[in-house]
Every structure is written in C-alpha cells, then in structure tokens.
Image (cartoon, rainbow, N blue to C red):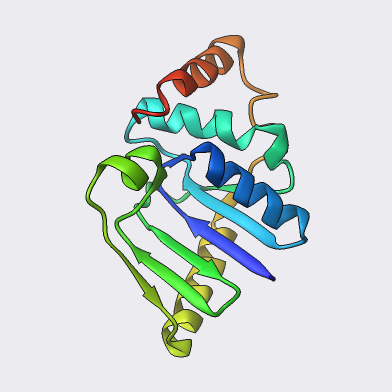
Length: 153
C-alpha cells in the first residue's frame, strides 16, 4: 500500500516480478531497489542495468550503493512485513537454488531494518530513469546482451 523497499546484490527479475513491481509503482507505492555500484559478477551486474532501464519500471526508483559492495537481501513491505534471507532478486534464487528467507512481523526488528535501509539509501546514488543513456555503445550492448542469459544468471 505504501512502501516496498528491496535490497539485493543481484537484480535480474523474472517477468512476473517486473509486472508486480510495475503495478505497485503505478498504484503509488514507494518502490525502491538498492543494488551495489561495485560488481562481483560481471554479467549479473550488467543485467541489472538492462532491467532498471525497462520503460515499464520507470516509476520504480533504483539506487546504487556507493561505499562498497554489499550483500544485503531484505525486503520491507509497508513497515509491516520484513523479509531477510539468502534470496536474491534473480531467477536462480527463485527457481533453481535452495534459498531461505525469514518473514518477520516484529515491530522493533522492522523499525531497526527500516532505519538501516534509510541510511543505505542515503549512501547510494539514484539511477537516472534510463541508466543506460549516458553509457557508451559497448556498455549498452553488453547490458542488453547479458539479458539473453538472464534465465541462467
């Protein structure tokens, strides 16, 4: 209803996740995705630029954490539910790997994680609506080409 904040080191969403994020943002939900600005897996990092540039996600705010790489995997829903675990926002985590996530409704834990997420967003740089616009042709081709492998990433 109000907020959907996501921390994920890897953002390679399936079509149904793209539609869910799009619909939430269109309803006026504050949808934010925080990813690292530094990479540890090149193809996954490049794919994140392709997906964050999708026109259907233009109301979703994407951020790149700048102090360094982070591996946080949290999702905050309306300050009522918190997801913390090993699941990334990618096909491997959703469909292939054995992942685990804890759903919490504890107000104190949610408040603490909300505060941490706010700090993390302050230490991040927001992507432009089209994060590929200012990139060179080779970067654009690599980002778009990595999308072809996204079901495996």
